[in-house]
Amino acid sequence: MYIVDHETANKRFLIRDNGAIAAEMTYVPSSPELYIVDHTLVDNAYRGQGLGDKLFIAMVEYARENGIKIIPLCPFAKGRFEHYSEYVDVLNK
Image (cartoon, rainbow, N blue to C red; front, side, top):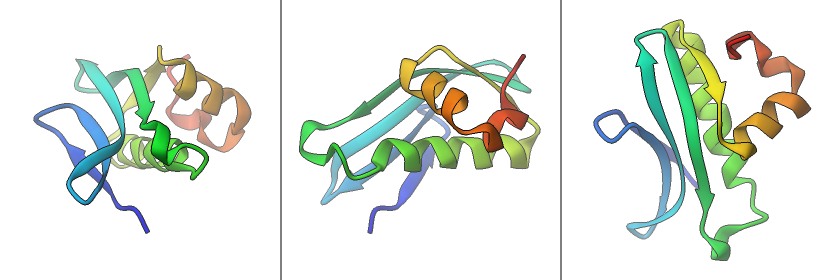
């Protein structure tokens, strides 16, 4: 089972496997209440295991807990918002 870590200093959510980064989602705070998700990457060896979704859900939960809205510039994050309506409460419209 993979655990998502949030590195606030590096502005990213990531999943490690034996110390190596398996997947990451980065963001840029535009303001304290608005984050731009600009990149999601899953290492080829880990594709198809749902790691991108785990990162996305962790970002959404963090946004909900902290009153943050998200602008998804990253195509992956944008696609998740389009596919899953239960997360649009944190989408900046």
